[in-house]
Length: 98
Length: 331
Image 1 (cartoon, rainbow over the protein chains, first blue to last red):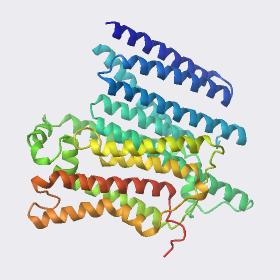
Image 2 (image 1 turned 45 degrees about the horizontal axis):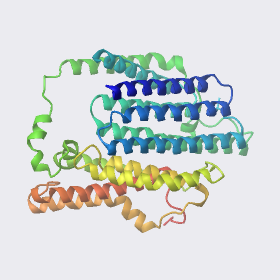
Image 3 (image 1 turned 180 degrees about the vertical axis):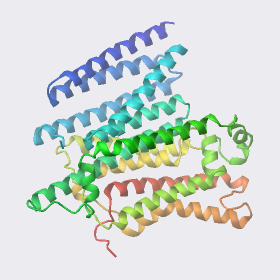
Image 4 (image 1 turned 135 degrees about the vertical axis):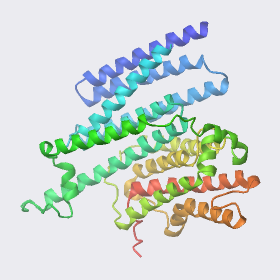
């Protein structure tokens, strides 16, 4: 009962962060501020979602798997954000063909 | 709760159709490629909802991941070819519409919409009507699930999907592996070896992350391969994960590609088809029919085929990404 309530609260809190990050991605004017909004908010949001799901896990193996998922997404997301920022810094904002 | 799931399914369906439409209607190729990846991820989610985790895994890894990477690298190559043509010959006459680069131009010129609209609509309506009538007249069927379940102990594995793919319908899987091989032969027969025009991001971040991620990807790939005998997983998914690790390595340092020597590379690429064929011929000789297994040997043979197929798929995907035969290998 308490676990379910905690899961609900944590998932909802995570979704708020995801929504904030997405709003930033859509509304902010340039690449850097969009990255700033997206990466930080989504990492915290996913962390909260993972934490919430941990209360539903059936054993320590599941908890560790969820933790691993979060850490891997953190590493991959950070690297991708760095590469986008680096590319923007050296080549300017992305230009479409048209 | 059920109502919420129905709502989720409807939103998912609308998302899939919407993204597919945006992808097809986009005149910007980069945007279309990114939308295609999005489409693949949504489709994987739909497979999860249909309780087909095997297909979901394959769709996410191959359909969204690897195909997306192939599309993006093709686009990058197209761009550099186009830029070369623009800067190299500034005063060329309008090129011959049937010339060698007609396909490239067709990709970039907007299609003549008015003229194609009526035929396209007619075609879509006819095909749609045929599909609907076919689905309408489907005889009621239990599917093949009971048949597969009844023969599971003869298959040598515990996972019905793997049993179908590598035992009951091994023929199909064999031909799929052959198609992957033929695709690579097609790419190699074009005979070019271009370095990938992508510019690696300078700095220690990408190599550092790869040192962390590639071992994890290898462990995951081997685990997915091993899991295939009793849970969702198998050669195609594992091969795609290992291939993705290889593509990341290639992308991190495209200027100094350590190309594998010719003979081992070729052996690895053909291993899946070769081992499958040999096992199939052995079954024929031993009296179980082509691609049939002795019941006691089914499990080790299936694992052997899956290991070889995983190796081949991973190598082929990386080779397709690099595209073209290895350099210094024009014999």
